[in-house]
Each structure stands twice: as C-alpha cells, then as structure tokens.
Amino acid sequence: MTQAQTDGGDTALEWTVWPARRRPVLSIIVAALILGLSVGAVLVYQSPWYGVMVTGGLFVATVSYYLPTRYRLDAEGVGLRTPLSSLRRSWDGFAVCFEDHEGLLLSPSSRLTWAARHRGVYLRFEHNSQAVREFVHRHVKSAGSTSG
Image 1 (cartoon, rainbow, N blue to C red):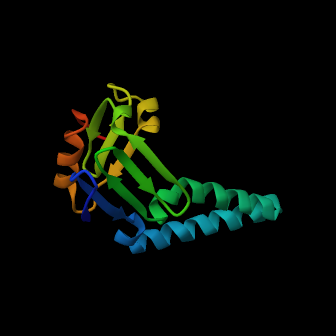
Image 2 (cartoon, helix red, strand yellow):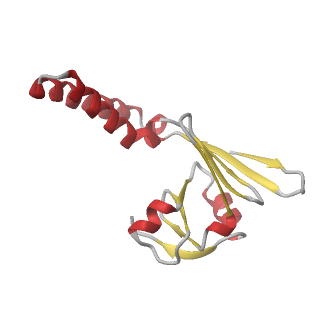
C-alpha cells in the first residue's frame, strides 16, 4: 500500500491485490481443474473448440482472482486497473458503501440488490482495511456490513 500526494494536497491511496498469490496451492488446484474440464470437453464433444470455449469462459470467470488489480482512491474518485482493463468512477456515482470481511462495495443504489452488486465497484482490502474505510467514508456514507 502506498500513499501519494496529489496536486491539491489531498492524499491518494494506492494498493495492489493479487488473490492468487495469497493462496498458491489453491490457485494451482483451480488451474488444474480448469485444464481438466477443458480436456474433458474436448474428449466428450470431440472438438477442440469446446475446450477453447471452456478455457476462455472459466478464465473470464476467474480473471479477478488470477491477475493483480491495482486500486487508487483520490479526491476525484476510484480507479481500478488490471492487465486487461481499467475503470475510473467519480465519488458522485456512489450512494453508499457496504462492507464485508474482504472489502467494500461502493454502490450506486442505497439498497443491496443483485444489480447494485454488479453495477458497483468492489474494493478488496490488502492489509489496509482501516485506511481504505477511512478514505471511502470521507466520500461515501456507510450502509453497514454484508454477510456475503
């Protein structure tokens, strides 16, 4: 985790989260399972395209686990960057934040719904939960904790 000064004197908070690095044995097991399912699809359907589709679909589903995500919070808003994509949202786009044990969900809706979970931005903690909470609560009100 790093803190950097922005031009206006506000402090920006930056950190990187890479869940696969935290649990290398689980990462290898899941990668082997993905490979096994892909090979199984090729054998069952007798076409390599099914293996490619299974591998691609499961990679997309697990990309946030296997690739590092860099977060940046500053006075203007929230930024996320992965090797495949980047996202920038202003604080005005969030109504509340919901907290669980792994991070904060910044939601455009005041109610925690399926749509709010998918339209919001999830900030994963990396040994910096207190700093992230304090920074976010300066810009977005808290709606409490979630169980999932």
